[in-house]
Image 1 (cartoon, rainbow over the protein chains, first blue to last red):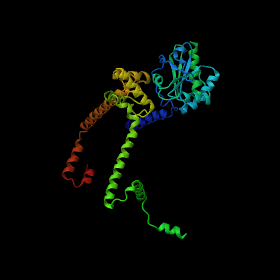
Image 2 (image 1 turned 90 degrees about the horizontal axis):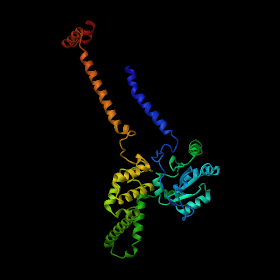
Image 3 (image 1 turned 90 degrees about the vertical axis):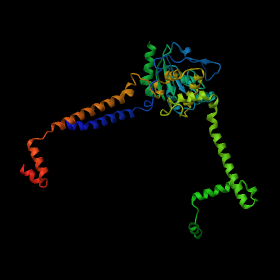
Image 4 (image 1 turned 45 degrees about the horizontal axis):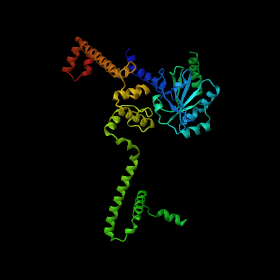
Length: 180
Length: 209
């Protein structure tokens, strides 16, 4: 009995070490990811000009009735290049329309970036001063939102979209949402 | 060969000395046109000029450093003070261990701008915090609200202190009981008396008992 009591601190230490081990082995990105308070809330409304055409506007109101992805990107964002092939593949497959939010970028740079690497977006909204980004709780680029027919944010992916994230999370969620 | 060894044997200035001299030379050369002055006066004048030059350069340098960041701050000092005070209570989402006030991240600057604009609109501090919490969650606050999810954070230390106090109390009570229970038997009393009286032959006492 007495012996066991002396082992108690060791048990406490091992428990803590276990917690740390699990936490440290979380996949990259998930570790820093903050839960968004916007999940299951209506996507913030905005009206922005389109990246390719300053005379045309775009906003969530135009997309009512369909499930869509909002991908926050910028030409200066390194991780955006990392996820770019995945988005291209997703857009080619035509499973879900992807709309871009060109975040704190120069119009010219954004247009050139898409011309150089390919354009996976139906269109991109041009958020020059990052105000819409703030409304969406964006704290880094890239971030991707899944938005349902009613304009409600259902899922947020923080960091570059991976093939795994598309297969395991985003596409199943889109299919589920399209049924309803 | 001979030249090389000679070179190695030559006394050399320590490196910093060389650097210092080079500096003096460089500055002096800028005033070569006044070298006709009498030597003592010349020296004083030169050093004064040098100092003045240095001060001007430093002043200019400090202006250059602050020029970018300080500009929007002085429109309304009272408002700016409020912005900074509240920003110190809010977390920068990019560098998560820095406050919005401290951080140089671009998002932090944007969020400070947002805070400033909201305050200009006449929003209270609480409303500004609500605005940010609605977008970024409770994580933006350095003082988390008391909620079911933060209960452990708020009351955890108190619970630990209570547990510690209970453990301490119980172990103290037990120890007191143990001491009280440890009454001596008659045999032990006799041995103790023997030891106290004839304390010299301790070991002998043992065998006698």
